[in-house]
Image (cartoon, rainbow, N blue to C red; front, side, top):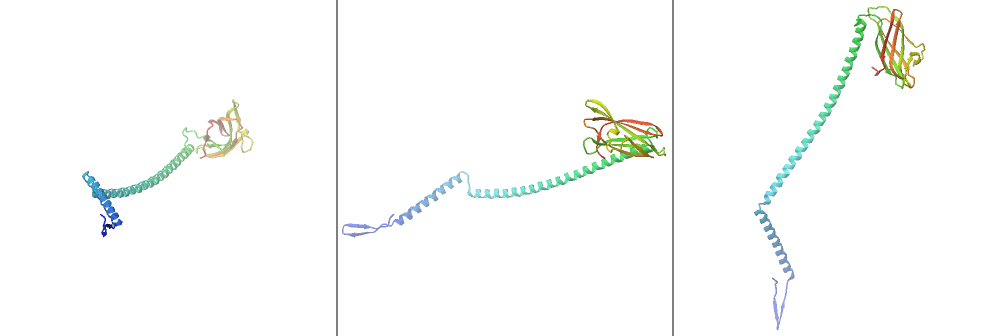
Length: 246
């Protein structure tokens, strides 16, 4: 292993050694051993059914599948976003359609009520063409205990003369667990006095009266009496039901 030379000087032999050559040989032997071990390892894996080439090919195929799946996923996300946008648009369109339909239904109802109202003027169902109460409403006036009474009086077109008179209103209710009736002049919100609402018309007239109920009074019904010089008084009682403006 070591390169040496001998020189005889009498009986003494002198040898020269080269340490770096020995190290090079050891490193080469170690490297060759590692290559041999790796070769044995690869041979074992090959005999066990493993192929490096097949592994590289499989990795390439898996990489291609991952890219394809990422592309498909991106397309699906785009389709989901488009579907979400379309659904939002459809939802808004449906909401607009429903609102339009509700408005149309409200208009139809209003026109139907108006038609019934005018039919009552032109040709009353009972055939009687005298003075009558066509409609009565209780409306909130925007504050506690503040209301407006709305009354529509009509007479048939068969009666071509002007009718005049007055309306008297009394409100029935309960206060302190006792029944009580309040006259219009006690709750007159416009402070006109008199307790009666005058009217004068040929075919119909809308009357409104502001009232302020006293604290603790719970209304139950409204009694309306319409008096004119051309016939007997018209009396009707209506339940206390606060309605929305419209």
